[in-house]
Image 1: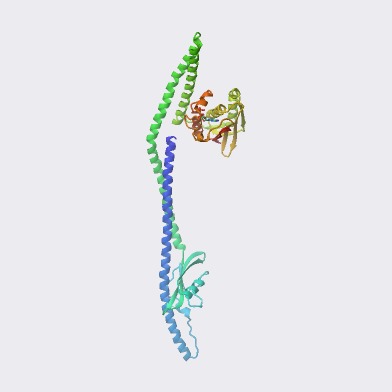
Image 2: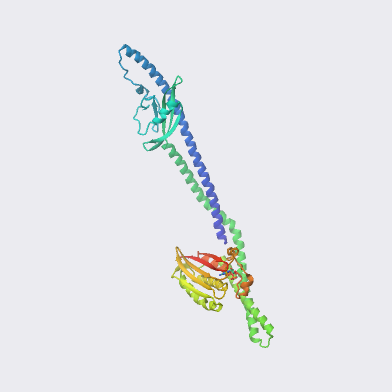
Length: 442
Ligand code: ADP
């Protein structure tokens, strides 16, 4: 993993943790604000109901006396009825605000708004009024008045210990709900602002945290690049000398010639390995950034199959291309290098009579390159490691098969694919072959 990727991941984790904490905090705060508001409404309803019940009790007790006097007088005046009726007398004394109604009811008589105004549709809650009078207990209920949600509390009114009627306090929930939403909105806005700040801070901190790692890594990569570069020359010289001795040393003993041949082959292998190492070190150090352009990957696959045809023939393996015309945003030279590594591996690990198929197709937003063989395959426990540097599933066999690499081929291929913003995957069933899939952006 490169320092910039470590940095990105570190920053992302920081941010994710902060975001999660923020989310939990905001949710908890929002819930408790809603709960506090709820309790406040309930308390207001209780106070309002108690006050209204007391006043109604006074009013009704007064009007009852009045009525009895009236009745006496009516008896005297032979049945002239009072002009004021019970309900008119309760009107105009109890407090009411635009978002609160107070309603009174006595027995089966129709309920009235105590401020004397028209009863809005949806009110009163007749069932609550009846039930409060019947049971002598408070009733909480809710409903909708003119499209607004309301909460109601209905309490019995007692005169001298007897239930004489009931009052119903109705409060609109619009204002308190709006207040709650406003508080939540403030929380969310503050939270988002905090998150933006945290993102900046975590990017900065992650950058600082990985700086020493990046420096150490760069030193190591520079050393690796320098070392492999410096070593290549003497190795080339070594090989040239061995070859020259073989050419010129006519009279040499057969065993010495064999040694020289082996020396030349070893030097050759060493040179390839140094080349791979240099390649990997440069890639990881980001020395050369790839110029990305549209690449006809279908054509590239067909050409590579044609190039490696002779090698397949020599190994007795059938190598075919099944490519549809496809373009990817990539680097032609690097795509060829990846294909060569994958096909080379497939040929190496497929016995005589086997098949290697290279296919190219468009799938969604990707051009997909597949190299599939029906060779020895890769054991499940080795699958996660094949893209690691210096990994070889079976060292002895790979080496013995000739031209064996040092286990860097797939590491380089993976790095290249990654630099082209693609992905590489492997699937395999031991004994039935392996399939490498490379996805490149279209
Ligand atoms: P090498 O240079 O040894 O081929 P690679 O990185 O290319 O190194 O491959 C790593 C290992 O993955 C190989 O040694 C081999 O064990 C395994 N491998 C790669 N491709 C195949 C394949 N097509 N079939 C079976 N094994 C494979």
